[in-house]
Length: 567
Image (cartoon, rainbow, N blue to C red; front, side, top):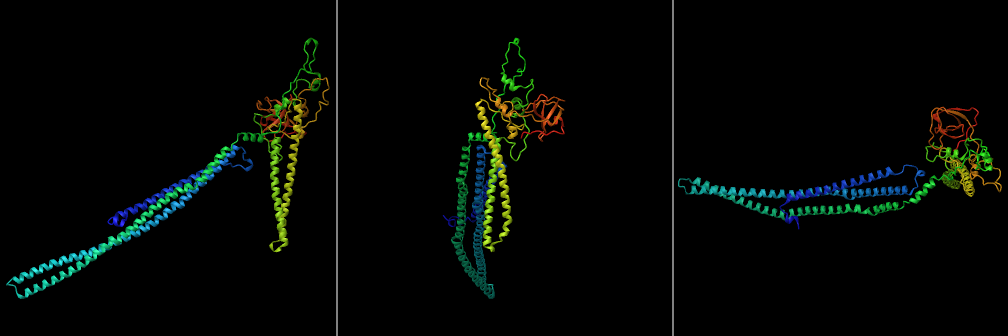
């Protein structure tokens, strides 16, 4: 159906309809704009969320737990998902919103042109109608004047009193008015014929053509809306496969969480390499008491053991496993922090070995890079020597020398770390041998732990020369003390006294490794404060431990040799 034939008299309504169509298109464009703004803000918020929860630590400090790695994988997939939301917004902005706004401007210009043509045609038809109406009115007026002149002429012609001149004058006037009426009639007929022709052209040619153009424009607008509806949906559909992959990646990350693996990583991260302390021996303080027959009791301690343990009186040996464990095990108490050292000797052996191996690997990679750079520079130098026009070979010598110097430094660092690593591995091997030997005696040797909660690898503290047991037990004698192996490797000389201190306040020493002291009690200083707020002291009874430096007044000996510090 055509607007030109069916709506030939609805110019004003078509004007309003086409304006509504453009307004509706712009309203939909505004909707798309708000939708893509939502997508952009959503993507931005997702990226900010990912950035907020992404690790900010260096690569070496990244946790290796599968739960953490899976979470970071989820964050990466979510970041990719945010990127797809940005793609949706860009597609909508370019293929929907931008296209609609450009098309809206074209529609406005086209509609204005068609309506102007319609108004011009209507104005021309109105002009023809006015010309026809004027000629009609003139013809009517001339006819009335001609009728009046005819009546006047007939009256004078029949009047016997009228003069001949008056009759002739009325007759001439009658003929003149009749002639003018005929001319007006002819003009009116011509104008009427012209108007009818123009009116036919207007309603059969001009208006149908204009209305057809408006109809085509409106139909194209409708088609464009349908296309943009499809583009709106396609922008979302195109990213669905990638979004599905992102979601699949999140599911895969969830499946990658391995509780057993995380537990093994915890073991690898914190395993010290030492064995737990062994059983505490029974300390018999009655072995030096004289026994008489009247007592009716017999000492349960073999004579050989009394000879070995011959410590005078009930004084507690500061090197005894009981006191040593009291002073050195920090299982649950608060402990001072250990300073980080270049050789990682502040770490337990297993952790130290891993850190040294890691550093050696990193240094080896840097050394390989320097070697590759040296080889590349040498090749470039050879090219310059064969083709001087390409460059000066001597200009590369400083860089080659610098690279060789860097290689030497790296080799020195690698050798130094390999020496430390060999030392650690040798001690671990020795410790394994001792453990095997101790297993034969049904006893595990006690490890040495620093007050900072880490073990020492210092040979002067780990291996000691036995001086109480010079020969194995003879046949027929009682079995040796099961803690003999512990004494053999842990029985070292007490740390030298380097000063003394007076307690300003009482200290309860609730944490492992600390020492109980009363106010005004005098203690011996055997190790200075290393900057962590703790000073190692010894009571007159031989018990050793750490006390807060701020709780004591310290006086150092001038000629002291210093104390051995457990690192």
